[in-house]
Image: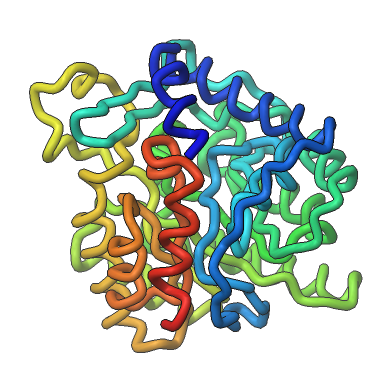
Length: 338
């Protein structure tokens, strides 16, 4: 309810300014012990990746890149929180402006470019947080790391976040880091996943617990690419796949203001494409690898549709911008008995 009053003010601001102000407000509310918790409907827990999720609805990576608002965001009723994308070294991301709203289609275009304070800062924030729920940490590569050395960055991040994460997501699908999506190619993906699984095994022995790995893929894939990715997931026994990141397509937003801006498109126009890839991958994998559906979830009905297409969990982000915390409760209620 309160968000409906705040939204006109936030939407009058530049999109990135509004984003930063929202996170600052959540941090301040937690510091001052102001009530921010929302009463999420009771739901049947979901057992995925060997973890017990209190409900099937999570926050997608990208909103809290540095892990600065974990408790505040969790209080909105999410069953899990994913933070990042984080890189080994701090980096500013792409030049501003780099975040654009398309309200007529409930969409966003972003070309943030993995702006973050670096993995050490994120780990420090996680350690200071009192959050004890399911925490995913999304890792990537620095923009100036050559693509042929990308594995070095992913391994460096994995080693640093391993002890602090419930699961780790390997982001190879952002369209805003040059050449990153090349890592979805058959040979590149095989090499990267092999290196990560070997390191995961060593870290599991060192820490006495296995932290699952999830792979986040793009929606802009053809049938042959989906088949290749499914085979790699099986071969390397990746514990989950997040379907999908933002799209380079502009279907559904043509001729709108900002539609020609470079970057990835999220929100309502992404739903069909992302859910199509989800459904195709679910059919290809036949239940062997859990799927997490994300992309265009703007209602409880959308969240349930992701589960019906083959997902075990659902994540949202852009819908939260347009609908506010009420969307979390609506999505939990729509999927609570699934």
